[in-house]
Length: 478
Image 1 (cartoon, rainbow, N blue to C red):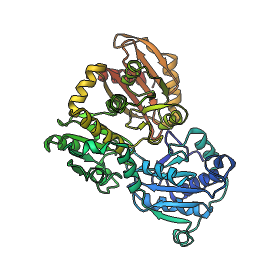
Image 2 (cartoon, one colour):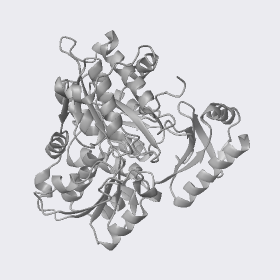
Image 3 (cartoon, rainbow, N blue to C red):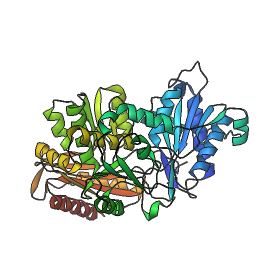
């Protein structure tokens, strides 16, 4: 059982090694047992038969794994809505709400390398399963034998229904965005789907405008062009070059299951998610007149602290993992919640990140303010100051990470780059906050055998030096 553990967003494993048909069936049975349990029944109308929504991405065998999960739920007499096609994760979350389903399952490993696949659980409220749910599911692993009927039998009995989730997802996004202001914006948009599930999303959304969309990597490649489908600069060299050479006004990019976002200005300069969170926060405050608190994870930019301070908004701190942001969106009046990896949740939508929605909000901001993304970035720096961010990953055994972080915490540096450390946080790895508000975070990945080192400061060079300092701190304890 030790090889089936739920991390920051579901369970992931290497296909054929950990992520096998037998293990996926075991996980599906545990989730079915949870849905049928007393604790699971609190999540939906227990006077109605339970339903479940299943979606999947473009990874190797994802559609087969999704069919297997459908067969297990049907074998447990739970009605299944199975997507006909690869679909963005937030489309499943929306469908869960629409159908009043007990939960949703997405077969995806999100931004992980192509050899991975995974299972994400979306709860009845249309967002990431909170820790108490995944813990309950983990307790039910191996408790009961797998019950299963064939896909054909399930369809014949009408307990498995093949459905299209795309139309409702696109309609919801268009209802949230001011499409009238985009009608005559005339933007030339480059959209990188990273071989993920957005396909023709931007073409469809913008079809009734005079914006021109060029979509790249909008077909299935389970190897993702030899790169991991994560919207960070090192994976986007071709995209950034195409934005510049095609003279596009803006570039937008979504990850493998389309819940994360990245962007590029007209010069092909990458706009990381830290700046996107800040831009979107200012947009919905100033241009959409919305209010509420801001949720940031331990690796989210200090820019949101400055925004919260300037506009007198409450700020909430959480460990990394969108499920923690989801919890605040369910319990508090939250305007925006963001994480450094590109996941952003917005008030008035669902308690879920959505890369397509965030991309469209960037276009909306450009249209409202009649400014290029490059100019919006300049305005952001003028308003909040210069902020630069980067991340480095180091392969490191999962079983040794806790001891390493503990050793660093027992013998922390007093200064970094000649600046005093004013605070050390240990609720998610170990984070050093300097007197000038630069910071360095070292923590283990929740989905891969990696140590992640994050840094933010007021210059690219200082960020580079902070990351080097983080590597030296780790090497010191080896």
